Amino acid sequence: MSLNLSRAVATRLCDVIRWLEAGSARAWGAAIRRELDAIDDDGEALSFAVQAFIGMLPIALKARLFGSLLERVRRLTLLLTRPRPLAIACGAGAVLLGLAFMLAADAPRSYGLANLSALIAAVALCRASGVPVPFGRRDPATVALLLAALLFGSTVLGTTVDGITRWVHLGPLAVQPSLILLPALLVTYSYRATATSTAAVLIAVVALAMQPDSAMLGVTALCTGFVAVARKRLATAGVTAAACAALLHTSSLPARLEPAPFVDDVLYAAFEAHL
Image (cartoon, rainbow, N blue to C red; front, side):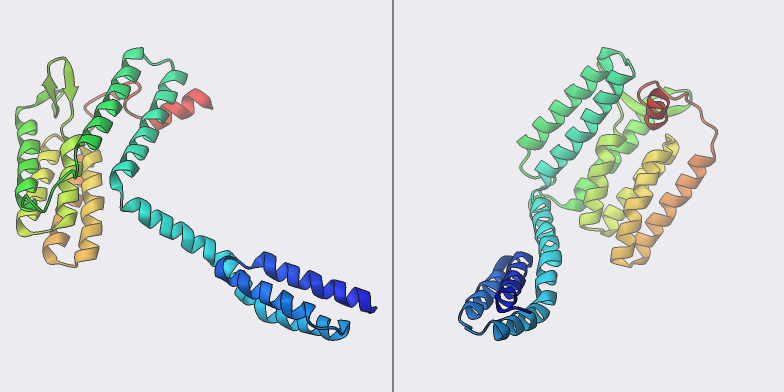
């Protein structure tokens, strides 16, 4: 190999090392290049560059491949420390997807306006509240019992349609309390699974079985299952078993309501509209 070619190959190897390195490891590439420039003999320079390349390649690849992954994990962790913006983004994404489906499927305009109004109200409430459940000032068990009582009360006193009681009428609006109360109850239970909060979830399971509402029971079984795995207590396992039993019971019941257009079975409707 000619001397000029040896020097060129050595220089290119150093350039590759510097390109592969990321973050603080780039200083090594710069130091190797300065050391290479200080070697007068082209053959020795090539030998030095090859050895440096072989030695630095695993380090550079590790920094290049795993450095970006760790940075993404760090950013995700920072994002999770600010749950309200994340919740607003997820809610807005879901509503906008629903609006796009309704527009493509020629749904009544009132459906889209109702969803958009709900999103605006939810964002306003989320922005106005400092912390959804201020545990430092209120007992989580008391909050859980209050949420469970409201859910049970809406089941007993709510509007019944074809044997199903899931809604409460607030003027012209029909509200499904389980969509609001149950997520807050499950978050409270996940935060601190005490005997009182466990009893509150059991009350909610009974209320959902009385409605009946298989979808919300499925959410309850999934959430309480995660808590049972994390806590490893007999009580949390019992709550999960109760939720699963109620889910199996309600799933075995015959369907009493026809799917509401643009509200139920939207995934099937979306496939039918676009395929």
